[in-house]
Length: 263
Image (cartoon, rainbow, N blue to C red; front, top):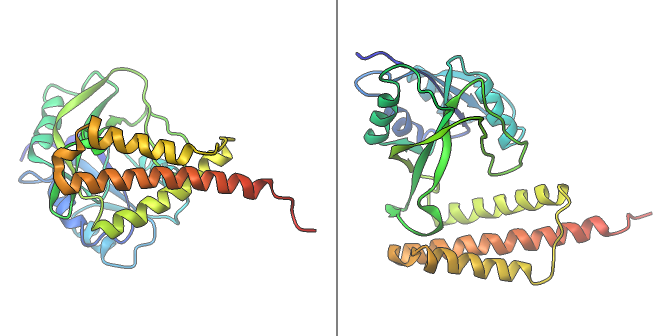
């Protein structure tokens, strides 16, 4: 068995029993690849925690307080000098696992972090074009040098220093079906509108339609989403729909905030 990499794989989960076995299995290569897998459970009622413990993960529990808060809490549990941010719906390919191992072949890398490219699979079809691919995200970084804003949705990491790109892909099995995609898009739109209103962002008439149209043209035509066939069309349409909804909700929330309170 080769030595484990000095990396803490950090995950936040809730009711992911159907997806976790594949995700956790991909972290193995004839044995554990990473020093530890830390799972922060936020209220699972299925077999999620049992699956994680059986796989040798260190499992902690906490009540849900928002994406960024929970993400930072999971990172704080890491005991290794490097953190790999992973979600339960993300599966590491063999190429990516080998690429990560190669970066530590001669000791710890000198850079501050690594970008990893994700590819979405939706109902058995890979989305290889449009706004969803390529999808580079900073996911492997030093545990003592990162920061994250307290955003309600679409949290992201910042580091100080050089950031490199890794070869290989991270499979993203994000949505169980089209209905799940729509439901999650609606939830993200509501969170985004709440977040931006709190930041003082203004809403303007016509913006929802204009931004949605721009996003559809960009994803479906300019970024060649049409090459993914019907799936590419549906993805571009759903993204445009979410853009329109979130800007519409922003306007509604601002109008609600401007109304005088009842006396």
